[in-house]
Image 1: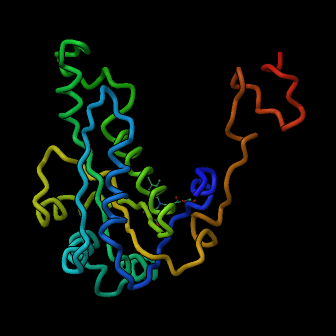
Image 2: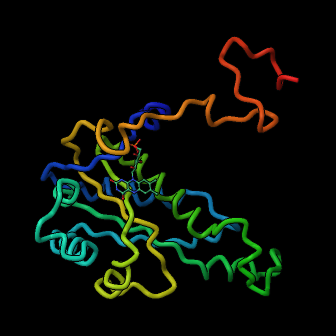
Image 3: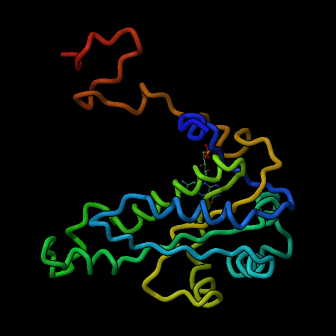
Length: 216
Ligand SMILES: Cc1cc2nc3c(=O)[nH]c(=O)nc-3n(C[C@H](O)[C@H](O)[C@H](O)COP(=O)(O)O)c2cc1C
């Protein structure tokens, strides 16, 4: 599929068919995640893959705080996914990498970081997985794990303290028309609203209005 098609077709999918995900497809999704950029090539990420029905059930049990007794529409749909991937960021990999001589931040001072690159890079890897899913003709949804559920999730799956789940991704064969309910119904913000060209007070010219350089 063309890149632009993949990017534009990617929408979050929240209901799946019972068809399993091929192992080769899962491998490709995960392999592509490893091609995300990372600060200092730290690659401080890890992926907990749950592709066994019992493990997927354990995920929902440990993260929904009793919600399984009366699952709402969202949860009923999400629980149909045959695969859940939990991307985790590893801060210490970054602090260690940047303490090396070529970076020189041997004090490991976190205030040096403009934003937490460990989360940023893991999010980039997650986006590559979401795009690969579309390229494979499947669907996925990135969603958050409630903070109150994190301790239980860690215990359930033996996740070490230094690893932070930045969210979770359901993966499966889509059965749903996407993009019409909930947050997605808000619509995409236009370029004119989000792009500032040359100065915050200036917008992005419509095609045809562009005289060839930033307006002065
Ligand atoms: C960081 C992040 C957290 C999200 N959390 C949830 C979530 O908890 N539940 C959910 O259904 N969708 C979640 N989404 C999906 C957004 O609702 C969705 O991306 C947005 O509505 C735009 O729709 P689209 O991705 O289909 O284009 C999340 C997306 C991101 C990037």
